[in-house]
Length: 84
Image 1 (cartoon, rainbow, N blue to C red):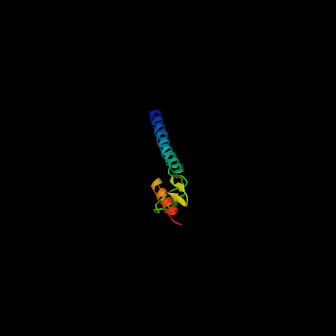
Image 2: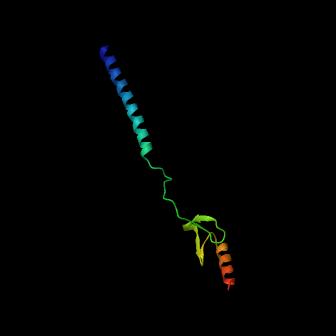
Image 3: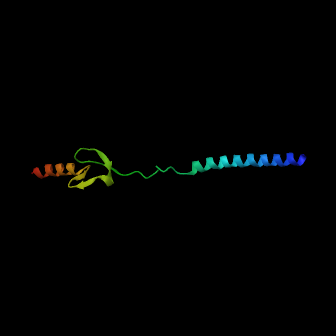
């Protein structure tokens, strides 16, 4: 009878220790993983025509600045061509 109680106590102790170590390891792993949204910030520029801000890689270059779309680039260049 003593052996059965001893084996049950050892099994219970191992089960409790394994659960405590598993919980502690899971919390450490969650804190060490860098967030996926930690990308480097993009350069932001303003449209020369309207002033709206957009990422530099989405802006359209033109004669006199960068623009948010083809219509603003064409309008700006048309205005500049009309000036003497």
